[in-house]
Amino acid sequence: MTGGRDVGASCPDPVAARHPADDPPGTPPPAGPAARDTPVVFRAALAADPAQLSPTREALRSWLTGAGVDEADVEVVLIAVGEACANAIEHGCRFASGATVTVRAGLHAGRLEIEVSDTGGWRDGPSDGRDRGRGRGRGRLIMARLMDEAQLDGTPDGTTVRLVKHLSGRR
Image (cartoon, rainbow, N blue to C red):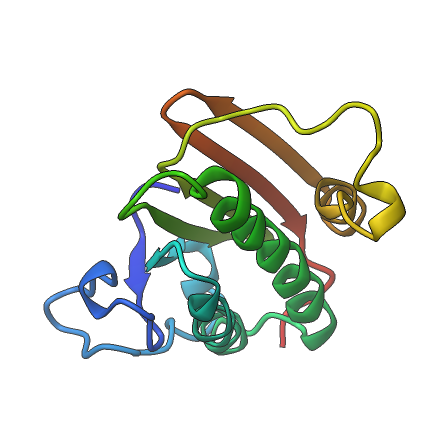
């Protein structure tokens, strides 16, 4: 997800959205067959606060729609990214004052790659299944089932979830 054009699409944190000098904020990606070979990038940084989930989802929805992603794929991606962001806020940033969550997405040739990173500390979840009875603990399973690839990398410095979706079609 390096290079390409950055598109902010009403990012929750306008400073986190980087735009080329000649494009105003929220400029949709270029259209046409040649433009589809140029990687398009979305970036958002949000405070580790559940109130930031909805604005982040809406910014990502706007970006995906502007990039011509099919509505069915948009919905699936929003659910998976929402799970990753909610987990980052609830688990990764729970004890980290001032922590942030970063969402980066890159679209190139029908392949959507997304990273959700937090600056909290990694810890394994309960292995005894205690949360399952309360309807919890299924975020990783949801991400894995909805996306073509879902990988979680945890370190003491934070966690990164990498999601890949091979798009079914673009408008």
